[in-house]
Amino acid sequence: MRISVQREPFDLGAEADSFARGATDMGAVVTFTGVVRDAPGGGLRAMEIEHYPGMTEKAIRTIAEEAQARWSLGDVLVIHRYGSLVPGERIMMVATAAPHRKDAFEAAEYLMDYLKSRAPFWKKEIGAGEAGWVAAKDEDEAALDRW
Amino acid sequence: MRISVQREPFDLGAEADSFARGATDMGAVVTFTGVVRDAPGGGLRAMEIEHYPGMTEKAIRTIAEEAQARWSLGDVLVIHRYGSLVPGERIMMVATAAPHRKDAFEAAEYLMDYLKSRAPFWKKEIGAGEAGWVAAKDEDEAALDRW
Amino acid sequence: MEVLYFAWVRERIGLPRETVETGAETVRQLIDELRSREARYEAAFADLSALRVALDQELSDFDATLSGVREVAFFPPMTGG
Amino acid sequence: MEVLYFAWVRERIGLPRETVETGAETVRQLIDELRSREARYEAAFADLSALRVALDQELSDFDATLSGVREVAFFPPMTGG
Image (cartoon, rainbow over the protein chains, first blue to last red):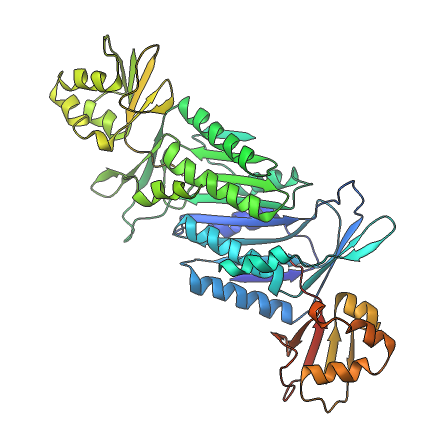
């Protein structure tokens, strides 16, 4: 299991390739990558991501361990950036390896659902004239109910 | 949409990176990679994949178009190899981009479920002394029921 | 009419494709004609529940008409992915 | 006791962390103490349904005891991913 909370960009291609390379007895590898989307109309200048150093790593580890307890998984990778990002930049990625595709997909979705609502990150959108904290969505909280 | 049915290996890292790079107004990118697993005990020498040239490309395109009609998606990528592969080699990958993660995940799972049972590929396992065609699994056919 | 065989159907019949002159009106009639030819066809078509058919590269079924069809393919259930 | 603030809680209160001397036994009592200090605390804690709390870096709730706790953090619902 590798968890990285970092300010620097990550290399999706290199991460995906090296993650899959370690999974020779796993039939299925799933990756999810989150990208900063521009606001409708193109007004987003930056997305600032704040986090809670110390708690962030622990929370992500707990979520990943729960996924490994729940599904038949090989390795798990979580990378999440903080700091200031511009539209098109990659915020985060998760990767899961499993003998079968259903486990790899479900575990990746579980990781994403919990990272979204249970890992201590907060996003602030910086526009041309204004800035605002992204509100948590009811649907993100509701997404946890299925697990 | 890019569909490639090819004998040659593909570069997962480069494919994932360039796919995600094209998705600047998409918040979510999912990839699935299928890997040749060794048989329990390590007896698999090779996996031979046969396909139906002409029909294969058409069937994959139809599946991908159905996914694009069904979910709010950006680009879709499908690469599937044929020929002789050894354990650890990557058989195929799909990638989906979408504004939201739920659509990207569901579309990738849909593509995989349909590729598994509706695209004309057949796998033969070559062991130390014997060889045998991989039988279709009831669970793979059943997986289509949820869509 | 071009008839194609894949995977173990190809192996049992011993060839990947052949041109067949037939008056069969449905897939099932074509199968009956082929089965009556030789033991290897009989072996390949013994259990239709283990077979799939495509007409002009579209999945179809055994009761489909062959009218206008140029290419028929027989194969086991697919195992891609 | 170390008290940490994140996101708009940090912005409203105007600092990221402070050391608080308190006899509060629960999170709710600590919040009441802070609210009674100054308007900026009152503004930050006006709507508890919009707040979350972590005790020693574990998510908790407002009725939890502070006994033995060294670090309390207040923040809005998380928006990672």
